[in-house]
Image 1: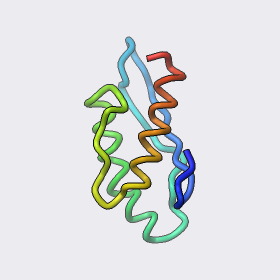
Image 2: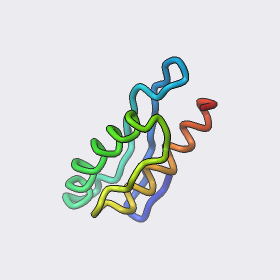
Image 3: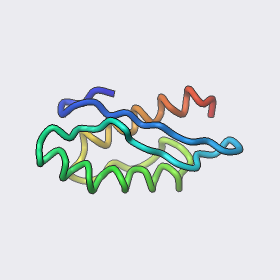
Image 4: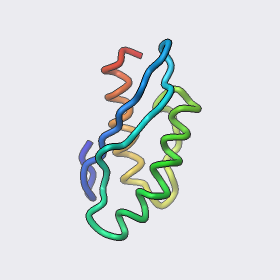
Length: 83
């Protein structure tokens, strides 16, 4: 998913029809500010993803665009996994 700060790509691991892990191999990191936001927002989003087992998670305050890109990409990964 493209955001104004760059692309966000989420991958998930599914076991027994449950999300057991998520990772973000592509995320905005073109500037120190992008890196700072990604370093605190992405771990929170990943943790919420596994806990919720869905894309129904909250955005991280201060990382609205990254969160929106993450949630959109997550939903796409969920759809592709047939969950």
